Image 1 (tube, one colour):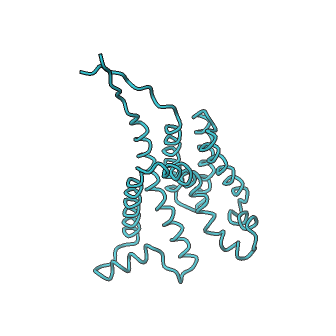
Image 2 (tube, helix red, strand yellow):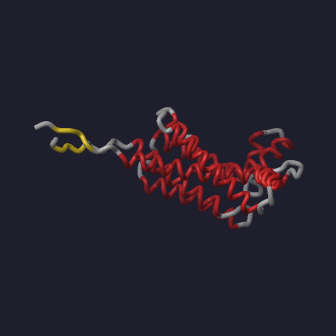
Image 3 (cartoon, one colour):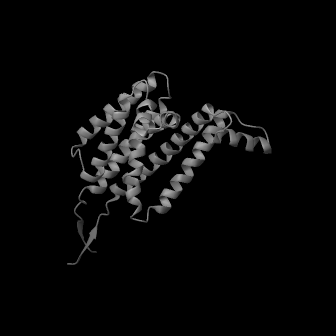
Length: 223
């Protein structure tokens, strides 16, 4: 009696889809936050939300800042997700999802928070290490924490460390606990560490599922 193989690893496809959705939501929000804060530091430069408000005012009534921000965020997330879906057929794009998207998920918010001050300190100090330390002032030890988190991301991607999911969750929880504490001091909104934590969970699941051995195929008799 002949047999046929049944059972495609759909769990990997679902993990990838979840990762793409989380990244599409989180990444545009980070970019818009940086753009908004940089425009506040430099009043001569308008943010993307300001430009959208002016554009909409040209064809009618200008929307509120909150509406314009949400609309731009939603449109950016949708466009990014569609691009990720179209590129999903190329296997080389998996490197992007595993590395760059993982870095954004885990330390995207810390890097964005430091970048806001980094350029100014780099201009004044002229030294990358010193500018990095001063960017996180008065908590300069955060620069070391960010670098340690980056190393952990690369170890997880390339060396599968930590191999136990519970240790990875513990490190991830400690990392975001530090940055949630910083947010509670009043510098940023809690939405950033929350979205970052969820995006990191989706990324971690995707990397783990993509590196595990496929499930054995199910053999069923042909009718």
